[in-house]
Length: 420
Image (cartoon, rainbow, N blue to C red; front, side, top):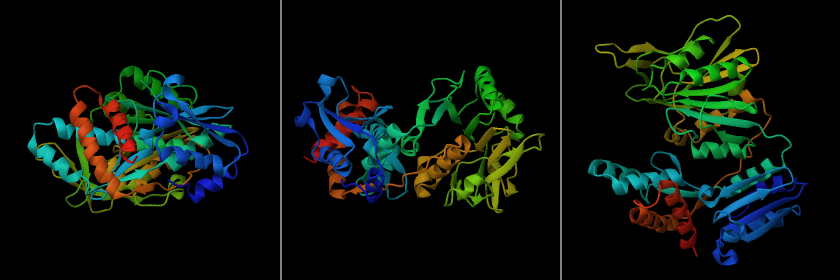
């Protein structure tokens, strides 16, 4: 719980006033003994930053929430989002809410094979806890002081409307406002980049809205699901830009695996990121020469990959397959990544997959923002072991009474108290 050198360097450049308000039930009595002193370090590092401890109930604010405020705008963070878990066996990074959901499944499933598998993957010997408050709070300070904050809109067709929590935080730390859309019937005028995960097909109205947004010079990062290939409404939008994919379920393999390191292409996006993208459950993309549209293959498989379909008696197609393509037409920028942005693949790649998504959005939005590159702090394993017991206790006890989101909040509050 110490400020990084990168944070101190940034804070030394702050020349406008910022207030950090820590809301804790009961004021001083409810303040976490590690988190509150950590916040005070921000005030010690800059004369323009003031930290205030306020009773959450009196302020009608959420307990253990933190508001960062300037004359321009404010951003509120919750203690639950200052921690995450890293699986040392698989490299997968989990937000606290995702971990809570896993523990919920362990405690409620009647399938012993599922519970045993999950307990093998997610236990105190395979999970490490990290504190990312340094990066999150510094990113929030930069956000509230920025004269311009580009907006990234998020929509999932056929599912929940938000993106992975860790990817969301990474974008927010880079200076973006991330706005989840409840529907895609219209795209907000201030949306400078749209992240669209097509877990299912768009409705006709949504396809029309997407077409209008792109035709007006919009920027879209599209990810798709190989298990939902029959998406005629989405396909009609992509066809205008010379892009298509197999209409039957298909997935790319490398050897016996559905996960492989991708061969890079040649594009400004790739000039800005350094690392090997790890593809998981990807499908292929075909391009057709189209007037006024420029195609750039960003990611492709090696020449030894093969494409497997679910068609009966179909032989696998072998060769090199594109699964991430950029299409440009005038001011319109469309990047299609033919796979979900997966937390497991991101962990195995050392964070490169989410970095690629961030760099893609930065190029599409032409925002000029830069990553802070502030590291997270590992929490000692002894604390993690104590925490796991508390996590399981809370979920097993309250799983019927409390929704997963509230359970996760309780988890972090209990976690914070366990160190007292």
